[in-house]
Image 1 (tube, rainbow, N blue to C red):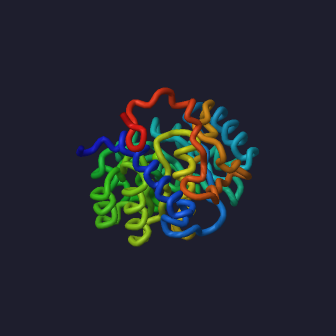
Image 2: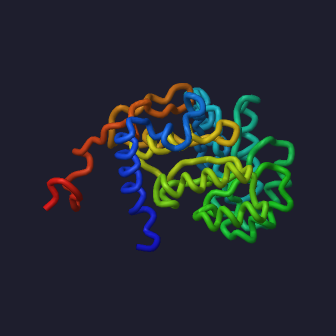
Image 3: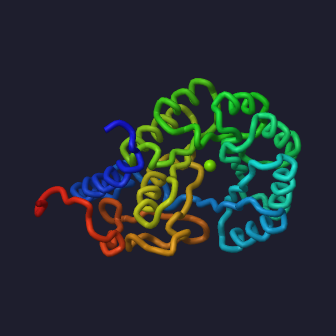
Length: 277
Ligand SMILES: [Mg+2]
């Protein structure tokens, strides 16, 4: 069936888990080899008053995270003030991203860029429309990454050919799981684009898949990712390593390296294979 990437994603991940188990190898080793022990995590600073955003940033920094994604995309001058407050707290070891999630017009984004010229940050997906992002890109002196615009291999090739960004975010459920995310990751790395592999959301199973994808991406080309399972109140697997000092490791046992907690899924919709009726 064409499309339906969200539905295909867990099936694709489950098949890769079985493949890794059959090979007796963790997925990081199956997907290109493990480079390093862990990957840096970012935490989002959601839009609010500058004071509240400052307090949120402080909480994340105190917890050990060294990469902050400041959510922008409203009034560009208010957003600039928000960024200034967070940047005033962050030391030189803290990496700042400003993510508009495509909410600005190019007009708004250009005003924001002008108001924040003296701050060191990465600009993420300023506008929704690809053409508007190209307008911003031409005027942008900051590194720029595209997230929502990078939703297929075709889109990635276009970004690469147009020089539209310095990096891309590959969200696994947009690509239908590990198989195509890996293709996109390898293509991006080969094209010299920095890579963030993550997803739309999830718990331990997707965190494990993300961790293996990240660890098998060359360290010089990977940026950071997110520990979605720590945002959730329900666990769907056990055996995933604890996050330490804002960094996430990948399991060392075969496949995903986590054991799914079947009770969290309820009754299966259908069963394939041995014992299926
Ligand atoms: Mg984003």
